[in-house]
Image (cartoon, rainbow, N blue to C red):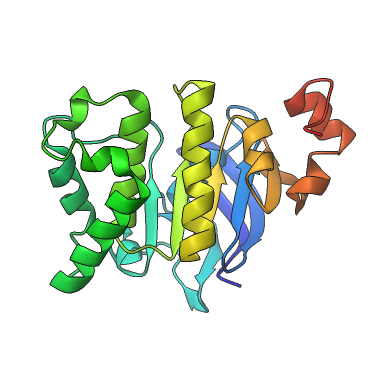
Length: 240
């Protein structure tokens, strides 16, 4: 097991966003978190990444309690985030954006290896290294955001709504690349995704959140056949 989250409660002021969420992340898996808007998916990722401090509960990573740890220290431990909306630095070049992703990596040889890996994974970025990130297409910016996270040498990659604003064709390409990163590099992934179809199709296991609570969990192939999931998230037909 890579990470265990136990009885996590998180508030935004007087509003409680997570109500005792517990889940586990295994080594080398893609774990998806699905749910409606306001279910607490992004709150969960922000808490894991250290951007929010929980009211109570524990987050254990590789046997170490990291609850409330600073975001920069979590990056050094191998937990890297691709935020919702990509948030690349638009006035910096593609290369500069990637280099910023490696700010915690002190070894020059490792930084070069990570740079080579990123360009091998996203060859479109290699063609645009000197181009300002703000001039890239939405799909290219998403590739850059994931590539920037890869430059941090992650063991666990947190992806927040990677399909947002992308066409179906580009979304399919992005998720194919995510699967390749997981399969070829053994990088574990927690995937928060509004598009339940694609999340269930590209993950090993799934948790369903509703109003800050886990209401269902299991293998993605099983969850996507559940009548309640089909009705709420997949329409009248399953993915099969």
